[in-house]
Length: 522
Image 1: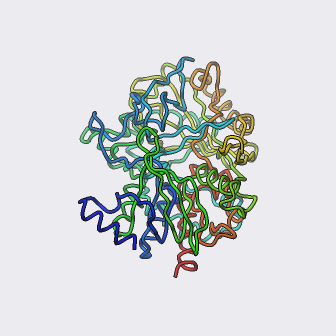
Image 2: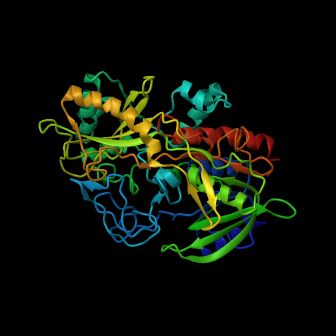
Image 3: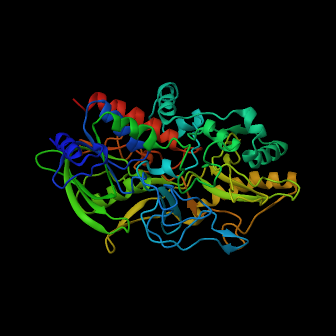
């Protein structure tokens, strides 16, 4: 049995079993493709149920420090660790004073992927822990009535009474000390935006986070090594952040039933004889070169490669005849969570602070406005110097959707989204921020997203959809016609959550895994 073989290899090599990669020809009871939120939930609940589980992750295990003594680089001095197989950075705020602010880097399997499609760039985490490594950690539960709209087949009461609390507890979500917030230099930028939003007629709300606010207070006091206060966020945090490798995945590893194969890219999934599925994968080095091709057999496969990764893989498998009977809805219903970024120029006397925490702690909540719902996180601009900039990531109710399609000429999967489809998001955000600008006598910055470009409308941090629950799958993520195949990630959510989505992804995975373990696993 594979689990015994893995433990024997681990004992011989003197390394933790969880760090050993799969071998060609292995057989595993459960294989999870991806180690982000849905994958981490699957890994923990399967292993706790006594099932030996193999997680396959295309990114690295971020455990080894570089020459500077740190695992991750910061935003101000990005190096090869920052981006996935690029020779130049691709920052969301890619310009300053209209000048390209990106830098040349060495090609490497870095922690942040900027995957470019025809009309949008999609930011995704690459590494053991997926997007939890590179996000701002904002743990926000969607408004109850909106959740009921986007996932009408899911019982709302159980989600809010059971699965959202379960997810928040396992993720290590904590709340900021609001009294400390009012005096902390690192949140002056948030207080400035908060006060201006309130003065303009909008309400604001504190945001919970998976970053340890107790650690952040020590950072502010100068008693620990700085991370959130050292311009660390989109390329990883060296300290303070409760990313999945420290929560769900660590708990799964502690069962002794988990293996994680990092730097393994799944290329095919197909039915095996007499049962289960064959999963083919390429093992890659840090330059992205294939160093081995492996095929393993799994009794059950859980797709958790993210909205983009899962959708692309399943669309390709259907087109190539590996999983030909997948529903037509696979690949449909993709959205960008209504993401659009924007910045305002503050008056010289209204400073935002040279020290800015990379972990947002407040948002402008105008979601209840039927004329243009907006939830705008007050984002940091942690440049290490005073810039008088207020930056926002607005989440809007953009109804537009796109689909993934297989291109037979290139053998690749594309996404139909066009930048113009984000106009509803721009219109909604403009309505809110025009009001604030008028009330505060401020103006937009037009030099941060291009030359004379106000809106960051051509990228997203929050890809959602592609394998929508109760459409592409059944009501618990099972793929019809293929017993033992499951989808457990953000591709289940139809394009929008109205807030930062990772808590919703986690809670939905908790719900679905509970059902699957009860009914499908003997």
